[in-house]
Figure 1: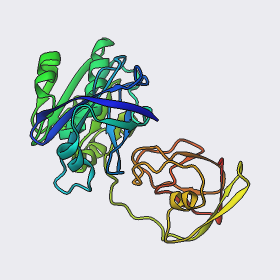
Figure 2: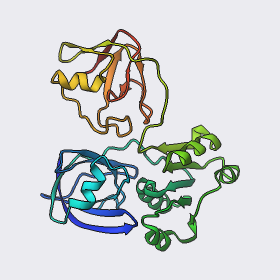
Figure 3: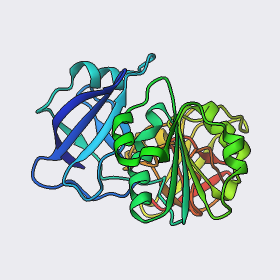
Length: 292
């Protein structure tokens, strides 16, 4: 955990505020494009925000959109946070890394520009061919994008099928935005070249929840997980140290390693082999052995 002080809060688009953070005792932890942090707010809520500043700088920049149906996070940021406030924030975590490629197509919708902005900057600096299609009722950082990237940025609703048809075979596609945009991108772009980040989980259907046991190999404990509780909650109620994070399978803060059993992955990240996100994922076997 790091402590950061708010240096500045400024409106950058309709309903969107940018916050500049700096460490209270020195530079904040380094990060790479695509990373996000957990921010613990004074109202005890924890929210995840993509880093959209400059990697290598001493501070961080995040942007927060006021949600119409706020669950208390974005509303608090806009109404109560002010410069000088000290916040607890996590070290950066990256589940949306920028992979090397000679050409990139970035597709962003609204606040989905936040993880894409440093990606676009890094890709252009590497000499790669870059294009950004940016749409939304609100377009944060639009002036910054025009100044820095000019004609490489296309504003307005993108024609994704046309972009897919013209895509170079070596190009990678990075997409972040509202669910309809992401769903269309998954239909038209090749899966092996498309990288998507969701801020909210998709509506999906899984097998009915059943009870199972979580065997914690390092602590020597076996924790029962009832059908009506999450694996994360069962572990935390048992006093085991697992970060709660988003509780929606999109942030990655609760990642655990499993050693045996058949997990049912319900996250939006795409758990790596041997990993599970217990906030949403469960077990299809009677026992799931964790490295915990």
